[in-house]
Image 1 (cartoon, rainbow, N blue to C red):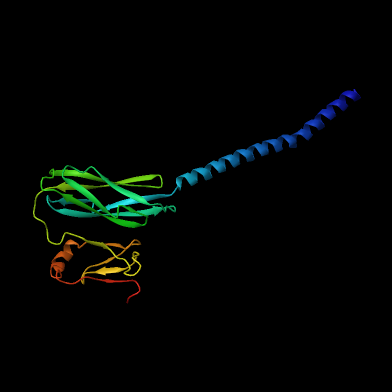
Image 2: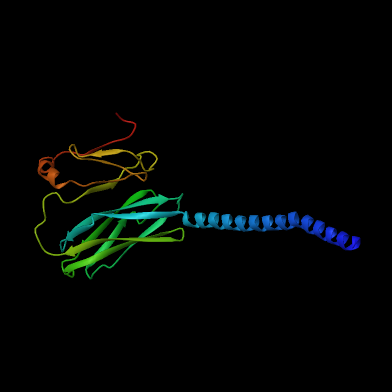
Length: 221
């Protein structure tokens, strides 16, 4: 009788002693699973925040006249530390229409001027212009609607574009103000600028066509 009670007591004591051990094992197992879950979330967040860039194309639509040219502006904005050269290309051009980028490769942030030229025998009608930027293993595409058709050219629909560089070093000058005397535009970090007169400005700007444009650099007041 006494031996039976002793064996039962020892068994109970052993079970009680094993409970903290089992709880410890369960705790370590849960901690390991929580660590793996947290690590997966961190890796997923890093994957989602991989360096990237965005492309915007302006205007979103335009009319291209045969034997004429029109310009669009591509703006590239870096995301999450993207700092690699991006090369631009145009797709979807109909027969008789060519595209030229200035510049064709740039490091964001920055802008490029896309000039479309239509030959006299260019295929008439509308088409979707796709502009693709590739760099650093990343590819993005934006689009604009273009119509090739004959018609009257409105006054002052063309844009003033160019690049401002230092006369001594030849380096681009960013944040410079380019003005025609009535309309102003700022250069980006690569020294490129564009001045697009609005329809309201065209009446006033027509009177300024003979004005001499000049450039005011950031250090000038």
